Image 1: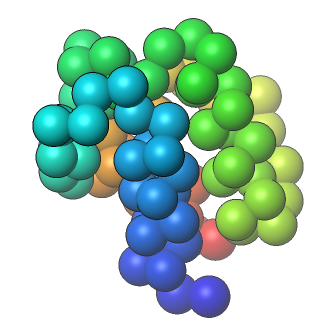
Image 2: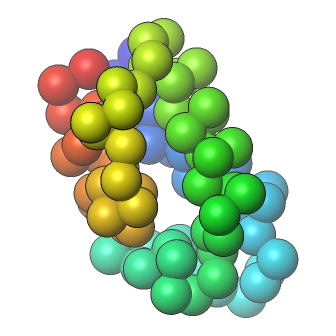
Length: 81
């Protein structure tokens, strides 16, 4: 699976879970500030990312800043996957 296919799956998940349907999930959109992600959705997103990349996220990788935008998710979890 390519990085872009993986990111497309992340975007699909974010769209499905989004309580604000008018928000377009751009690469640099702050997912926390806009309310797309809250504390529960962040944990669910971590599980989604682990399933997509087929390996666990190490505790030291896990930080809200690493999940704040689609670009950061790409860089931190898929660029070296």
